[in-house]
Length: 564
Image 1 (cartoon, one colour):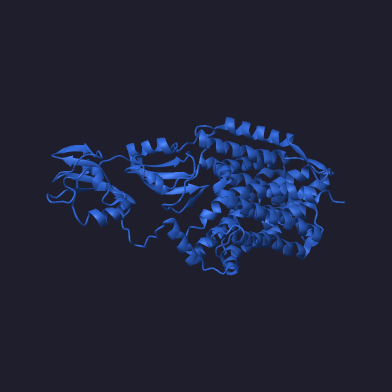
Image 2 (image 1 turned 60 degrees about the horizontal axis):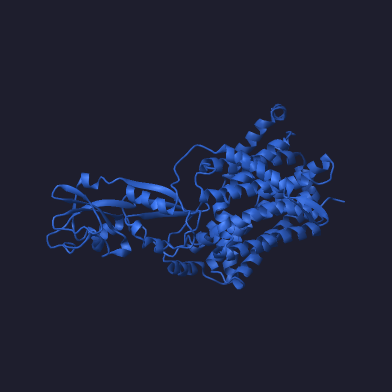
């Protein structure tokens, strides 16, 4: 049976790739506490496993195609935040990312020199220890440019996968443990107390579990104005200003059987029936206790929209500042997503270009606000393949043409770095020209997840036949060296952020997790601090580190050089 399967997979290598991806996602779904390998590393292990009994031929063109697609997708998704992070407001995050990733590169090079590792093992040491699988791809491309025989290049590429597999386990677990347990102890801080103080500074109010009942966050309810009601004789705007902190608004009025739009200057009269919109708990507590609720279906039939808007205005204004504008009357902000991660809402939260805002409110209010904030992100299944194809082509072309001397050798950025930069440019341009280069979120998710998983699976299939012999060659030293490479940037970043940048401890630990692109470590900080605010440190550091760690795959190969 095994012999038949081996022959089948060798004859149909494309099916072996699909099998590796399926097994990789299955292995990656296993959780050990809060830790899991994830689909990418799972695909690497699956490829290595299949490669133990079947020498599956791989296609360099297929690997390159998938990896370029992945890199463009990564650049496209972080483009709106990357350039913003590089500006003044994100200076601390940029510096933290530079220091952490630089320390990781330096540690990987030092360990490689001490252990006498070749360029393949060194690149895998870096990608696995810093949990940046994308570095495997840039390293593979750099190895392809080395002046070596094809058999030697193939051996080095296999070594990349071997070292990555060996070092990834501690890389992931070590980052999670350090950010959530060791880091707070070294800083001598109480994460829960620090998170509470930061929440108070930002104006975040924690919701008491069970305080809000019902199935809708925002509602419209109808109430009758009493003869002696405190609102009689007051304008709609004056009534709304009675409880400004709760942001309750009157959207419609029934007066004598007639429906009237609630203009701000309209004066309320006794026996008016008013349609009030706002958060459910605020309506119940502030209005329901003082007025009689009325079931008026026609009055309450107000068209409401829930839409996602891409924020394209200049960065820097807080939610509280925008909430004071006249045109946001009746508008509610449900969530803010930055770089694909939802950030906690707070009055002092500053919106940045590229944020995705989820707005709720009457149709005309939402449409008016969208015209001022940015375009509505309408669901779409259409991908702009013209921009996609040309951007990757031009990016790859530019990457091969840009050359510079490094260590006595002239090197080029390469097609992978070029595709990454192309994605950044297109992603940034869409914040200014929303209809340019539109690619649905689902398509981007497929490009980034399947592209990298398939590339890594192919690398694992290639490395499988030599995995055991390579492990014997490097032995325990590679595992211990990987631990050093993982812990070095964490320690350097922690003390640099605390004593040089003077960062808040919770934001610092979130930033360190972002500087190693380890989302699970950020989630562990949130769990330990019992607060979501660590994401505010993670999101600005992540895009910078994601780009740099990917580039380090090329740099480490060039630095280690051709084996003697």
